Amino acid sequence: MESYKRILLKVSGEALLGAQGHGIDGDVLEQYASEISEVSATGIEVAVVIGGGNIFRGVKGATQGMDRVQADYMGMMATMINSMALQDALERKGVQTRLMTAIRMEQIAEPYIRRRAIRHLEKGRVVIFGAGTGNPYFTTDTAASLRAIEIEADVILKGTRVDGIYDKDPETNSDAVKYDTITGDEVLRLRLSVMDLTAFTLCRDNATPIIVFDMNGRGNLMKVAQKEPVGTTVTWDE
Image 1 (cartoon, one colour):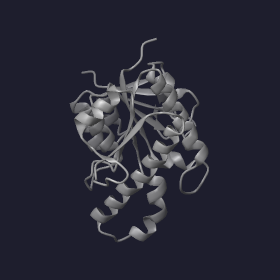
Image 2: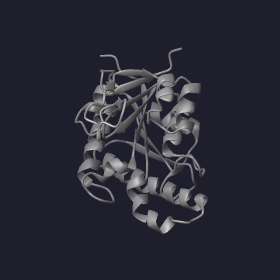
Image 3: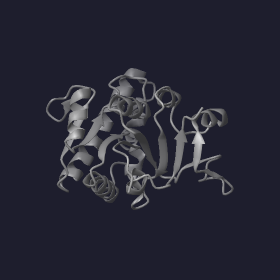
Image 4: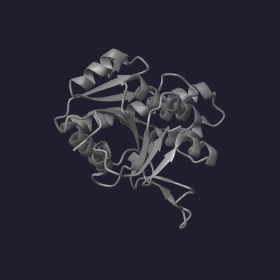
């Protein structure tokens, strides 16, 4: 069966909430680690970027009126908490991992170095990229796009709680229509919410395909990684 050689999985921090109002749901973390482990075991090279919304949302009230740069750095710290949790869950399954950070914190993670990241992937290690891009004003979607391009990933897999891209919000509109494939230009023209504009533009300029899929559907990650028709694929066809 044909598979991607190297993928970058982007998961939102909110996805780790599960049924909880804050923090990390251990069952969700366990499921994600199992699925990533299974994909890695097939020989597909896996890199991961996780958001920090589940941690940062809990302190957001304290950041009202705070300097934007300070608040963004707090968000980057939140991504590291999630990244460390995923690393631990994977390693308990016997998966070799490396956690790389865009902000120096030698006690818990390697500094991000592109060549080293690629070497880890080539050796079959799951590489988790934490702390976003290391710069304020950039989202973890942008970090995912940037890292995917740098490591020459075949595709960005955006794991969400919906099963693809719709013409309107399927959670509030029962008549929403799902796209199986859609061009990047159509996404922009229709103003569909896939990634923020900076992240999306990076993907467009480098012709990096994006697949949006339901990360909570058991086995979906494996299906997407093996090029089965799951979710919605954003292409850059002229």
